[in-house]
Structure formats: structure tokens, C-alpha cells
Length: 227
Image (cartoon, rainbow, N blue to C red; front, side, top):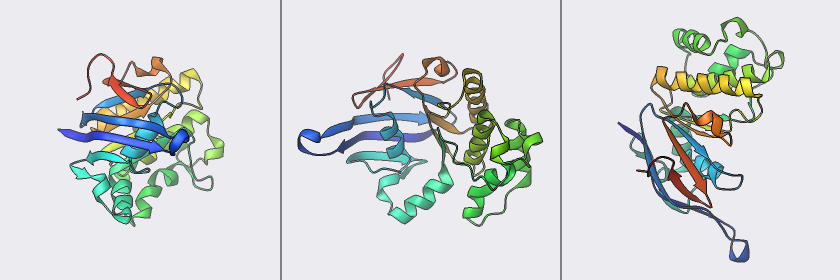
């Protein structure tokens, strides 16, 4: 089942001599439960692509469909609610709330929508991410790898159909990076969620179902053509 569909996505910054085509007619799709990795040099358009897909930035042209819904056909308020309920974000910086413990940080997105956490799901996520023994720890009491696990749990808790991860291992050592990759992959399989992840480290793409490269605003699929 097609979960994400991107059609002719273009994004331009600036005008005149300062004009930069960050994305040029990018089109591809992903099925539910697929894990995709996006690689490319700095400034190639990777983060712009992820931000447009997530509705954090508006494209100049093109369409983004998530679960059949046209993201850019929504008003700003509707898109904000849809994004919070259907798209999970994981960033290089963990963005955890320092005063909240592990469990409280994970369930925080639910509280924004006045939803009561399903304790069975919380326990399941803590188990999958290996955080059960750390559930009452504050972020400052955790290693970088552990903090990123909490950020992953926060992205999983709302059961989003799509998870967008922007350099989620950028601040981690090589072992922690591989651990986070393994956790993202297992979570994707376990919860049948589509994951699109940016990384500059080709070694971390081995577990991905599909690998895309962005260069000068153009996207191609390594090992095949994009859909």
C-alpha cells in the first residue's frame, strides 16, 4: 500500500543571482513499512526535501501525499494537526525536555492532543528501545545514544504512518549510530511504519530497503529508478 507519494516537488530560495533551486521536480513514492535512506553532500537538498515532505516548509511546486492526503491542500492549522498525528520527526539534536523523565518525554506528543497514553504501548516502546530500566531518568542522566532512543520513542508513540529522520545519528559515535539504525529498522518492521532517513554515512544505509541520492536538487534511487 502506497503511504507516501511525492510528485514534481520543486523548491527555490532567493531571486536573481542569489537564486538556488534546492529541489528540481522530485518524484518518488514509498510503501507502508518501507525504510528509505537519503544520502548526498551538504547543501544538496536533503533537508529541504525532508522539510517539504513533513510540511515544515512549503514547496514552490508539486504535491506531497501522506496516506492519500494532499499536505499542501490543507490550511496551516489543519496541516499542523495532521502532521502531529501522522508524521513523526527525529532530528540530529534530540530536543528532549530536560525537566521530564524518559517516559514523560515519550508520551509528551499525546498530551499535546489531550490524549491519554496507552500504557501497554508505552511499555512496548520502552521494551523495543531498551529503555525500561531508564524510564525515570532525566535526559541529563542519559548518554547521547540513550537520548536519541527517547527521541525515537517520542516519534513512535502517536503511531505515525510516516517517520522522517534528519541525520539522527549525526551526534553519535559509530557504535551508537549503528545501534540507533538497528532500532529504527526494527521499529519500522515492528510497527509497520514508513521511515525516510537522511544520512551522510553510506555505511548506515545497508539496512535500508531503498537508498536515494540527492545531488544539485535532483533525486535518483541507487540501484534503480525512482517510482
